Each structure stands twice: as structure tokens, then as C-alpha cells.
Length: 231
Picture: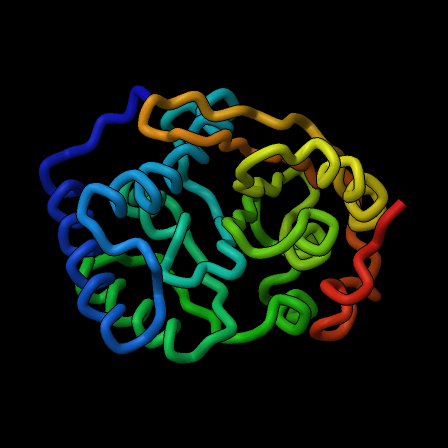
């Protein structure tokens, strides 16, 4: 991928792995626990986001990112390890996972990282976070027609949302076309990730924010999943 990772960053990834496994004994953070598996399934997969960013920003990744439904800190924390200039908000609805994130960020010695506990449907109406970030990320959270309602409200006009997806997603992207438009987005591309470490199809759905999101979105908690905006 053309990434230059320092010895210090490699050490941070080792600490990340150990903390993930230790805490996973107490709370459900991941079903993937093998050392090599975590490197590929979690860390490398998270860093594939850079494939969509480098053509726009080069190596100058120093802007505001919101990671929606971050869980164990993925993909936001691996990106923050790699690019110290990033200002990162980790949004997680589960307080136990948020407790892990607070511990992890302290152990890794990362600054400019904020952890917000709450549902995206609620937090996206807070003026401190609404349409404030140049980049919004989400990994393995929800179908795209639901996901854009949970993410695009955080994205500033001129910014982008990147969803990490696996498998055949053509139908999912097609079904989300109306939601993307209603929420102020425009589909830029679906970028396939071709790395020998992955034995399945992985891609990045890149959506640019071209208009403000109407104030009524996102709807109240649970509704985007129950009644997604579809064509």
C-alpha cells in the first residue's frame, strides 16, 4: 500500500493488539483473536481507507474524522496511529466499549482523540458534531441505505464519507441511491481493494457531501434501520 510505518508505530500496534485481547476476555470486542488474524482482519483492513484518501490528500492527512460505530476503535485508531495530525472522534453507543477506548487511547499515548458515548441518531443533532468533519468513516455497521443516514449528517459540505464493505454490494449501493441524495451526498466511486492478504472482496464506498443534510435527519434512534430511505 506504500505506507511507511515507523518502529514506534509498530510498537503501538503491538500494544493495541495486546489490550484488545486482554479486554476481550471481559467484554465482547472481537471474535478474531489470533495475532496474524488481527493484523490482517482489523489493522490492515482499517488502513485500506488510505487508498481512497491518498489521491486527494497525499500524505497530509491532518483533518477532522468521525468514526461512527467504532466498536474496538476500528478503523479510526489505526489511522490515528499512522497519521498523528488527524483529529479523531470515536463514536460508540456501548459504554463498556467506550471504557476500553479510553483505556486504549491512554495506553497508546494518542492526543487529539475524543470518545463520544451515544447513538449516532442523537449525536448527529448536536451542533458540536453536526457537519463539522471533513471525513466520516464506518466499518461493518449497517446496510448502506441505513448507514448514510447515520453518517452523512456529521460530514461537512465538501467532505466525504467512506464506508468499508465486503462481498457483492452492487444491489446495496443501488438501494441506497435515494438515501444518499436525500442526505446531501453524491456517490463518487466504489473502490475495490486488491491485496493478497484478503481472500474475499473488499471495497470502499466513497460518498461526497455536496449539500447540507435536512434538519429532520437522522430520524430518532432505531428508525433509520427499521425504515431506511430507499428508492
